[in-house]
Amino acid sequence: MNETPERSETIVVRDLHKIYDTGAEQIHALAGIDLTVRAGEFVAIMGPSGSGKSTAMNILGCLDRPTRGSYHLDGEDVSDLSDDELAEVRNRKIGFVFQSYNLIPRTTAIENVTVPLKYAGVRGPEQRARAIAALERVGLGERLHHKPNEMSGGQQQRVAIARALVTAPAILMADEPTGNLDSRTSVEIMALMQELNDAGMTVVMVTHEPDIALHCKRMVHFRDGCIELDEVVKDRTIISTG
Image (cartoon, rainbow, N blue to C red; front, side, top):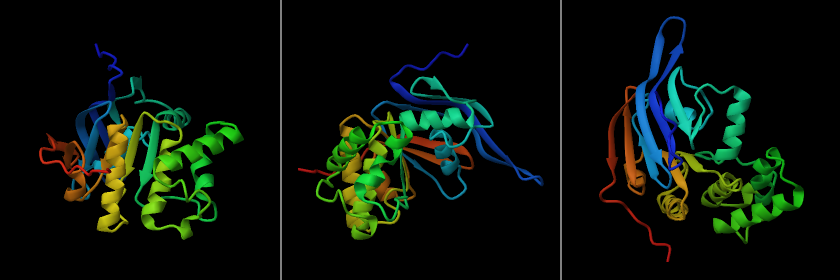
């Protein structure tokens, strides 16, 4: 009998498979992975193109469903939920950060950050207050009314992080969050990620950059749809924000 995971186990995946049927062949993107991420961890998911890391991230983020296997997110079995049910889980439990920021071009930082709150049914005045608090948390208290084209790439990514945090999710999922940034700005974003993690946020991040992964506490390496290595980062890069 499968036991319900404890609340301290934010992500629990068992024998997870994802098979894509192209008609001519079946592609096994995930071939039976087992993964546990506990609350407060900072995990880097790595691997070459086609290794399954992006497929895994889509399933962990409730953007897709597995072909078979089980997935408990924050104690809730989400393996067989409908699209609408998955969307509700995403809104309640997960904040997303993407490589391309995905900001609305003609709107201000505040307006971009309030978008998830509108979907969550939060009232107008509270939307604004929570958006300002989230932007201040990521160091953009003086850029509240700036539009994306008035900000640097690093500032735009901070807006995206604020938008991910504004609903107070259980977990932050970041897909190549430094992929469009220069080295100095990448370090600044990873410092912010470490700060959020130090404050208790669970972070799962896909990256192909080994130096970026060294900022995390744990690396999970994918290859051919399997986890080939799961290791603690021994020589972790820690950025002092003081």
